[in-house]
Image (tube, rainbow, N blue to C red; front, side, top):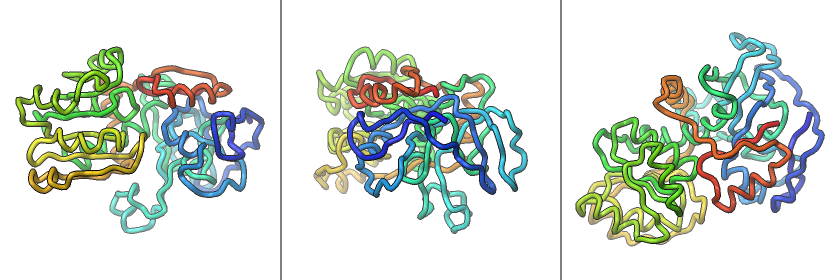
Length: 344
């Protein structure tokens, strides 16, 4: 099969489009022909070696996958060959207390497909995954649209609904509207009846965010977003901030919170190290919530709203798999709004 692999860590030049062995079908697994694979910042981190680990063999990136089932292994039932599917990106043991309680994303052995060396992903014509990770694709979506859903909408749903318990009528600040998580979080917040304020680096991105449902947009390159949030909320601040940026925004995101507000974060695409004035936490009863991926059942919950059109995939650009290096550069330059999708 054709695949894009890395043989060593480094820049975009380390992405090689080449022939690779077809994955072997094993017990309890399914072989899927990849029709589309969307990118995430995770792909960049793994390529550059920021996630740690060795690279003993060529690795295939890619966590967000949609395609067609071509073969099923021994012990797999109810998944027909030819079915159009989305792949749930999280892998867990399925046996520990957390998995059995449904919190598979908190399993001590949890990994993301393509996100750790040794767990090949979707930058390829074929991928092998456990049968439990196979989900029927909504009939009203293209493969490109379907691939733009799993990781970011699962992450956003778990952040807002599972961790921060969003309530109708709340004011929610979503940082980085153009990111995958940002564009998903705007929609999830609106679905739950919140008023959404969002930030971006350009007026063009803010206009796109408004089309997704954002009520107010703040260009953080021209104004102070904390001051603007206070103006928009009558000095109160927002009940919730959704922040995946990191050090560039984190401390000021805390300042933008109302008394008793909560900040939920799923990562740090810019920088993981930050400083906080702790008085902004304890004097105002602020809560900081960490959130990693989400439960498999939460992805199923979110998918119901794609079938009704209440949630929409956000695809910035579709490129052939052979141009994965270009796609990585676009994301690193922050030129995308939503997901960049690769097609084998």
